[in-house]
Image 1 (cartoon, protein in one colour):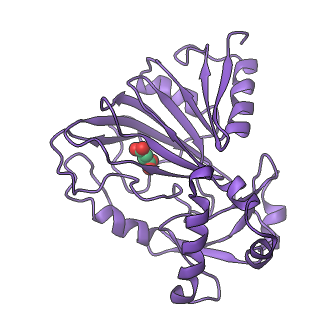
Image 2 (tube, protein in one colour; image 1 turned 120 degrees about the vertical axis):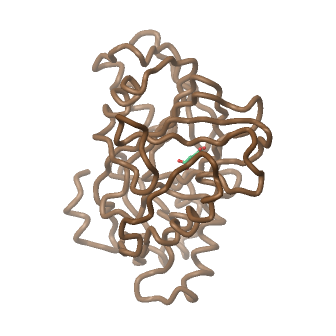
Length: 294
Ligand code: SIN
């Protein structure tokens, strides 16, 4: 515990944690310090870790029980783990997983609380993941916009994301199963209260949230586009650089992320897990204010 250090990455979030070997069982105090850093910095990066798939699962399960990915075929023997892979000879025009700004599975009644990547192979340069902080994005809106969006309910469905996944079907390395009910809609407050910190979150979701409740898609799009552009302004974002053995874990309730496709001719392989969350709460849906624990 005494060796653990937390080095903040940027004013928008992210921290590198050193002095901890994640392959060894973590004491309660050590994990409490990691959890506190997670609440404070939203994205944590641990370097030079040597982890088996089982050890990767044991670590991530400390945050919350694991949740299987709805579309991507899992790694053999690990039903909640997927491999995100791009081969060196993949055509540059083929989309990569997560290329557009997005939250993970926001169409679920209880969206995932967080996700984690463990890097098995990184390109010599490029292949970063970009993150944005949706709490400072909310804070930096004008009072007028805050008041306008507070009562809005965002309607999400996996289908818009599935169109995007289908566009990756040329990808040689990934295997998808889109047979789940991808058209099922889910409603969540646009302005959410983070269940651990109580801070307000501008809960835009990228491609999945496609309209506001009671509005048409056409009516919703301009405001949706403005809010996404605001959320992803440079001063709200930060990038994680990956190396073999890096492990990153992020809070999916208050960040969006985007994989950057800038490493043609090089391979990238990451193991990925995600963990369960609770129903998002917000004043726009008063029933959620009592349903979800603070
Ligand atoms: C993801 O969207 O989960 C993947 C991000 C990445 O590969 O950088």
